[in-house]
Image (cartoon, rainbow, N blue to C red):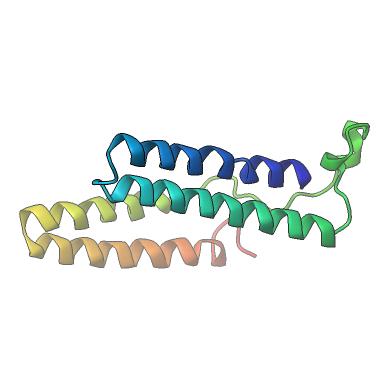
Amino acid sequence: MKAESWLFGAGVFFFVPVGIVYGFLTHWTEEVGPTGLFLTGLLALMVGWYLRFTARHIDPRPEDDPTAPVEAAAGEYGFFSPHRWWPLPLALSGAVVFTGMAVGWWLSLLGVGLGALALVGWVFEYWRGAHAH
């Protein structure tokens, strides 16, 4: 995890100076740009610190050893769905909700109802059928 911590932590050394340069170029009259860049640098610092803190408290992974063989990372990585269709109706119902905000609120209500059905279908996907657990 040390590589990840350095990768995210290096964002501080990019975003903060860019925020300072951006502030000088706009004569500090534009508030959103430098603030966003400084907050992005702070977020990179927080993520980098968290990953570094976690790397110190767990055992080294095979990815941390440059001389580790490929077989060192073998094993079970978890369960992955063979196919999953429920995010598609959920995304389409989200599109209906946002279209309803432009066209009419009645369409948003219809999208919320369809979204609730799609969300229930996604949550209970493995309770029945061929892949039931």
